[in-house]
Image 1 (cartoon, rainbow, N blue to C red):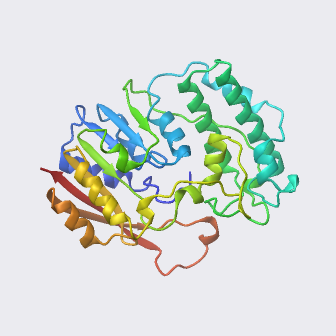
Image 2 (cartoon, rainbow, N blue to C red):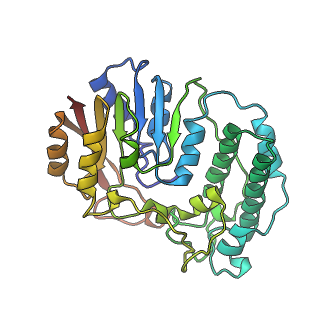
Length: 333
């Protein structure tokens, strides 16, 4: 997924930096990715550690991580179900009625054809679950496969804060669900869909990786369509963009972020804490250093990289084409 704050391009830097502090053998370590997003960092360490704990406030993120992190054993007949989804007849359901132009909704997040395909597929996955034809592991595999495939044909500039007036080239392609491949490791990982500051008081481990939102952009608004497909519930979409109600993260609030961060570090029952944060964030370098230094040995490493660009930004010259990613390190005592 083309995802704001994705650590895909930084995964090598993060892994090398963490190994330098903790040591190369992580086989006995419990690794927690508390603001998991699409789960890139958790996936990077999945084969290396004893157990992964993954969490995110957004439900679509929970779905992705419940599959990529939670699934560790072979899923029998998985591809057979993918084939069945791709052979379904389109249906005019919730997504078509509210997010496709042909329904009269005045919204165009997907082509009419793809909106109806999403509806047919999402209904079928839920029917299989309610009929007990599929277990939870396969359910989240199918949901993840649908979410990622639908995202590839979405008519947006990478995020769902708005749709485009005309169908872009990729949005004109017919939706085909592709298999969401995952690594089989045999672990018993844990995946949560909770507020990070509440969950931190209930878990413990060895390595805690933190990648909270950096600014005021709420992920619940930017990726509301993915939540709608994942939850597939009945609600009244609001406004031009068809927003649903969403939980607001305190890490997106200038007033709340520092207080929440202090509480998080205080209650963290982990020996090593790593915080990703960039130079455009709500908390200053000094704020972070001051908080983390109270609880042990603090250090900092950094890397410059290309900033996130939505489709519409691709050919523009930004004042800051690069941003600096800081990895704050705390060995807790």
